[in-house]
Structures are given as structure tokens and as C-alpha cells.
Image (cartoon, rainbow, N blue to C red; front, side, top):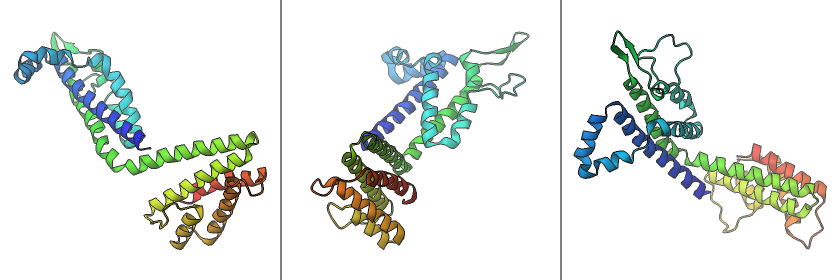
Length: 267
């Protein structure tokens, strides 16, 4: 699970780094002499090598834009519309001015002139990209504060897949295996619930019963819920121990349905 989070963070950092390079590339497109002078001052003989290594804004921005939206939808969903508005012109736009100019206009190299005088040029898009980059960079801080939520999301997805696997096994009459998988999901969900509430488990290898007791003693679940989970744990034990009577298809169906209910009601 942590590997997925690490990859997510690495991808976000790459996105921010590419955004910074695109920012320089954009300025280089608009005022090449100024940027080339700055590069010579900073890198000397390696200035040309540095500039040649910059991404091409016209070619690479669209990929950065799409990947940024995907990240923002997970980390800063309330900023997605703002991010898009810096790219897309408003549908109600009646004329092209510095106020209404957007990044899409920049990508088309749109310029407005009147009587030989430039009224609007691509530099009008710079502030919009500045804002987009700021929004993506802000996602870094949100990522740090949202690690717990992301971990929860990934674990929930994994447990949903395992429940589907249990249902598939049950469908093809692998009854004991289906119950064992569902039991693992139940135990993991109860363990995560205890972690969420910062309940400490005394045992080194706690069981469903241990988590169930801990949740009841802290009033996270009531007695009917405790008894229901206890019943599910009994079915799970039938599935895990081959020397006890074979679990029935009905029992395992009850276990799978019960685990799905617990995942939705106990947290």
C-alpha cells in the first residue's frame, strides 16, 4: 500500500517539476532574448544545452494539463473548475482582450491587432499558467495532509476487490476458500477501524474477536453489532479450520453479505 502512495507522491513531484520547466519554456517563447540572457548568466557555456533541454510548451502542455486534472480530482477537487477556466475561454466570450485571453489561445498563437498595433498577444496567457502551476503545487501540501485519506481509499478499493473474489469463489462452489477470503477482509476492516480510533490492541496477533471486543468496550459498536460480528467470526472459523464441519454455501453467503454490511456501517 505504501508503495502506491510513494509512486503517487513521485508522480506529483514530477508533475510540479515539469510545470516549472514549462513555465520557463513559455517565457522563452514570448521573450526569447531575455530568457537566453538569464540562461547565460546562470549557466554560462551550458546555457544552450539548458535551453535545448526545456520541454516544448506547445507539445508538452496538453499532457501536463491532462495529468494535472487527474491529480487535482483526487487531491483538490474543489479547484478543478478553477484550473480548467485558466485554459478554456468562457463560452460567453464576445471579444478577445487581455482579460478574456486563455492558455488555449496561447497554444494557437492568437494575437489581436488593429491598424498595425498589437492589442493582445500571447503574453496575456502567462498569468493563467502561473495560476495553474500554483494550484498543482498546492496539491503537494494537500497530499501530505491527505495521506491517511488516500491510504483509506486504496485499502477500501483492495477490500472491495477481495470481496468480489470471494463472491466469485462461492459462485463456482469453492465454499471454504470463499469464506476464508471474506474472513480476511472482515479482520482487516476491523483492524483498520481500531487504528482509525487509535485503539491499542494488546495481543501481538489479534483476531476478529479481539477487535470486536475492543470496539464494543469503547462504544464504537453496540451489542447487536457486536453479536453480529461475533456470528460472522464463527463462520470464518468454520472456513479456516478443515477439521471442523464443512461450512455450507448458505453460511458463506451470509458471511460475505455480512462483511459487506460491516464495511458500510462500522468505521
